[in-house]
Image (cartoon, one colour):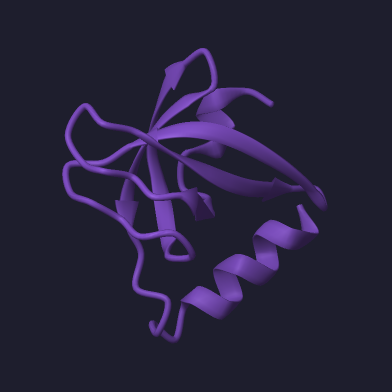
Length: 84
């Protein structure tokens, strides 16, 4: 999976992101298949929360931002990601 094609996708934190240069791990589903990446964020993100991929660092490393799972848009984005 090309890192740049991940930008804009929503993933789920599977290992808490500790913030700054202390990464965690996220799962991003692409075309129905789960892919796992090391994830960095400026702030801590708990396991189970959704994140938005904002940059690919290469070598299966991503920069992410917290994504409000209660947003009315989230269901649509997640559904789109599951189908593509």
